[in-house]
Length: 275
Image (cartoon, one colour):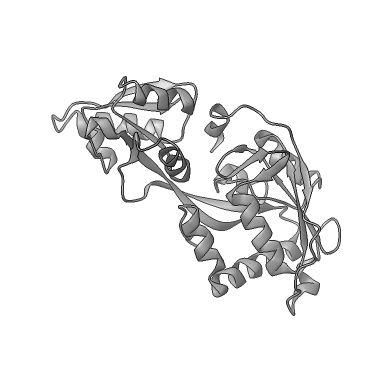
């Protein structure tokens, strides 16, 4: 998800306290064990990645703050959100500056070597095309022979190069002509200017861009493309909070609130999430 930083300029940081006393479930005494302040969960996120999180009018908003509020309510806690640089999130967690990270952070071996990850959603990429082109590529294979705009450094860039060489070229469909752009805004502008025929973005970002394009850009893919699990990160030695969050996610699943949040944000249930 780190490539979102190309899309939006850095906005002012904020620390927001919810200040709301939520109804307390029967097991809440164990839920707040392990937090820096009893009954309160301090959550860090890099607020430069809409629609996951961003700052608007001095307030951190987005799908992750929404989820954080749902989880805190389930745990019977108050919650606050702290903006931090994405590259510094796990370092700050290890230094006990906050209790958890909820920042659309992919679950990777490199990160789970440093902190515990509790899966809460699965995201994927989506293919975008301009309405004017009449093209509707549904799968990466459909991009063979097309010029595709991609943000430099994204996780699926090497996958497209591999697909182009392994499948497109050998099947005689023409290689994918990949045009790299430093920012998402520039990649989208290239589409609108007909310099590229399609693009790939993280799915919920793709839907947000399409919704704001007044019908000029469409999400043409229909299935998960290059799925990635995202997780809540907690210190490995904080067994009490790991257990509490796991139970909290289980409660959100049972109540249907997690499923609604996932659908509202074009996300999916994470394999191996609390059950």
